[in-house]
Image 1: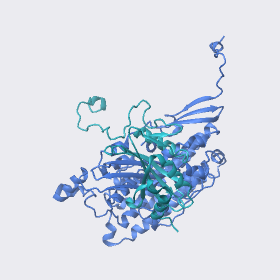
Image 2: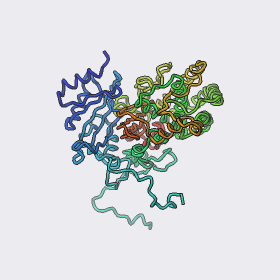
Image 3: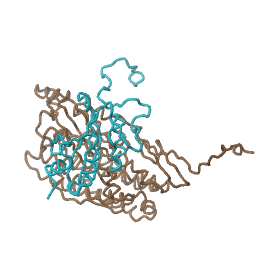
Image 4: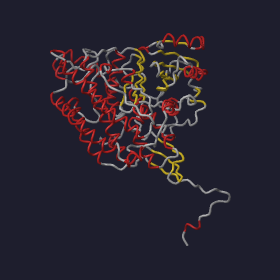
Length: 168
Length: 408
């Protein structure tokens, strides 16, 4: 029998009770969240369970919601069960003042750079990561540019020296 | 007495027996801005540390200020060897978010373009593997057929490399006769050229010795590294987005998923060649299906969604309604639903995913590109550890790493 979203939800609730929450199915993909302390437990369960078998990490990234006080940063995992061809989305939320989330590198080697990228742009501190340093930005950068408090440059600004940009 | 003899190592220090080699970021053999700090013992690689980000352009941040259409040119610059796949992947993501259903003819035309892009991309990759093993001829020979593919794109969208092809809901204009003539020419002539290209390498002793057994990865490790696309299939896993999660009516076509066994450079090369044959089959089927449309259906090239499909430029100048729509779409003032969507397409080098969160505003709240190259490159150390320096060069090119995509 094919693995359905309802079945996955049932298995998760049986295992974790009310710790897993926020179930939804936007555009058909089962989405849920869990406290950040148990992110590895959930990922491990999804990986090891004989029925669920979510053993492929498609993607990992973060989203910044500045208005949610205490849970500003969301780390989003996209997992794929290749045998039954089912995808799910799993989120953990963390406080921006203490953005510690356990690393998934022990489970997925591919998470290494994805987590580095997430750290680079959002400042999520992946606890236990073997080499957590900036990857796309310069090492000297002292802020996390994808956070919403860093707006893009004002498009109407006129104080730039045009000659420096080949427009003089 | 030479100066060299004066050098005295401090007491108790051990002389370093390995050599550090800075390969890249601008080295002719890296085909892009990749830096590798290699630690070499003789010619063998002890460790490799990659530095990426030299052409990082903050696409994800830029996308947060751009209405949907203005994001398309950004996707061009990801994997620029097969830009139409990126463009259409993005349009398909938007269509999924907006709930637009495209007509069959649009789907088939898109399939033709995407498969041409796959061929163009694989051609580059495979012929570059040839160049890196010392055979330049194949590369120069197949370039004229990439040129022909570019000419087809040019007929359709006016540009060649960074195509910005298509619209949400379809294409900006119908394919003209020249485009179809060129497509027919391509379908007629290319198989012979591809076969010649393959003959040049497939049983070539030098090529085989250079590529077989180098840069190998097992299926388990490849899955653990989140490999997708030809690199995963070369390791023996038949995962293909076109089959597993069909988009743009790929379920209407008959084709095989070629797989390898060892996951080494030779298998990757073979898988890409086999995929080009499959792409040709798909294009032939799609072209046939396109020709079967009769009457009014034969002129359909976009979905009927005035809220999102840019009106004809002629009408924008002459008709009030078209002008209003044009303005609203360009300024991002049309209604965009709240939601989050992940959509992926089989890019030429793997699963290209778009994770789009919309808060109903005029621009994406968050957009993330799942870039297959970025994910491959972290496995480079594992692939090359203990191998010769010259094998690392071949591995680098056979992974089909594109700096533009990696650094986003």
